[in-house]
Image (cartoon, rainbow, N blue to C red):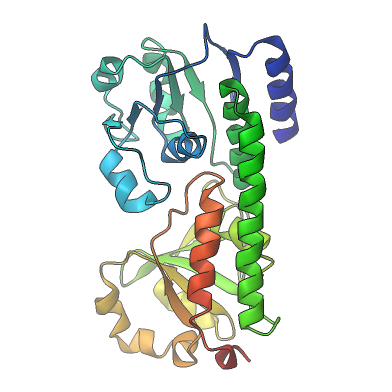
Length: 301
């Protein structure tokens, strides 16, 4: 699938600088878009990483809370919820292109009454989510005449991720135990970010092993009860913040007797968005590296 998208993108560039390949085929535009609305946070991230300020993004406040990096420029209008975008607000900013993704699939016909829509199936078990986002970024860059800049930024991203992995390897003397990335949802439940997650992709590019990747899923995670963590006694466990109920869980005997807690193999990770685009890999890798380097190497032996 990725090879097909790459071929279509290359063909499109030669045929017209005002066309874009998305998950459905070819989107024809009258001119290079200047007023772009992004209804997916992952797609908004890609625009910002191309130095393009979207005129509107779905749930701007939520983006600032959860995505954090890259920050949206000032003045970006709010387009309603991601799973229920406000059509009136979208029409009011007069976009010449709307970027939509998985959560907006049902409203694409209505969005197309406002402006051309490029729909990208970002998260699915049918493809590699991280690789798909990379291809989407390059497709957007070609459309906007920023391909060289995009290639340079991706090369810098790859170098940053590799450097983060090297810092961790040095900290642990070259022998890093497998890493388990989780997000605690409540004192009883968690998400385990495994195969096809951005967290797993970041670990892989850092040269680190995932403790329990499992089978690929659409969004790259499975939900499990907290007590299942008791099976991880030699791995390094990373819990991605925020977790408002941390004190309620961390003070329990259940948590205190977890093997990785008793042996000092646990660390919390500053907030990073685990459902972002390709550049989220860099933010995740650097945040993971910071947290892993707070763990005493002796605890991992």
